[in-house]
Length: 345
Image (cartoon, rainbow, N blue to C red):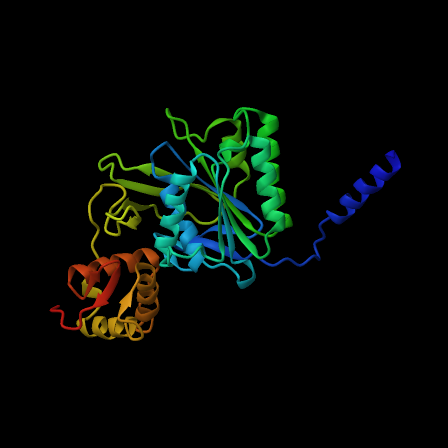
């Protein structure tokens, strides 16, 4: 028996060796914030924050972005064609409240709430104990074809003791195994301590050490209606923090002109672009569609203005959108945006 075990270990050792001549491609990027890579296939990330900081609202926007592969808040998702399936695991809420989260995801994506999206599965795990929750997640991951993104809201409910080194190491090891073996991305949610911004317990420490990126959601000190998403730990270049609030429909929406440091609006230098360029660029933006969603508008602003020599990132495109809206070049109609060709510059 010992010999068989030694042979197994030897096989694992040999298969795990890395050579300088080996060729590896950069893993597919599935989630970005601006130009910063938040999530790739084969890795996991997390959102952390205090209670009522609106962590789940932020994660629903990320999920909706992945579902339709476009911009939501500042989350820009691009799932490969063979990795379009998403599973969202809710570990703490009742079916009633979990369905409200599901409803937000579908509404943000622009899909009908009369039909369950083919690429989205939502699983409620509140009634199970931690080992059973882990088993269900593992079985779902193994059994789901074309799975690209798994959301676990929240990871604390997969262990009995958040301060247990053994349990923490075991569950983080599970995340590492699942993501590598099945080539998917896992994004999970964890509370931070009430007294500071540290992720809770030994589990939080392990998560910070091993995750590809950690996003932190905090309520603005001057305006509690606004939440801010900022990088806490990220392997790629850090993104600029962004703000969001909850609109009248109970959905997260960007606060584009919000200055994170001071809570004051930042302007857009309209002097650098002529009226004629604005007219031509905006006509190009709305050439094929009279009404654009927020994410479509930002993407098309970046694309269209680049034709005239203006290479904007997402942040500056958002400021441009606010400027155009303030100058009545575009206006909002419901949850969509429309071009006003008769604007006065």
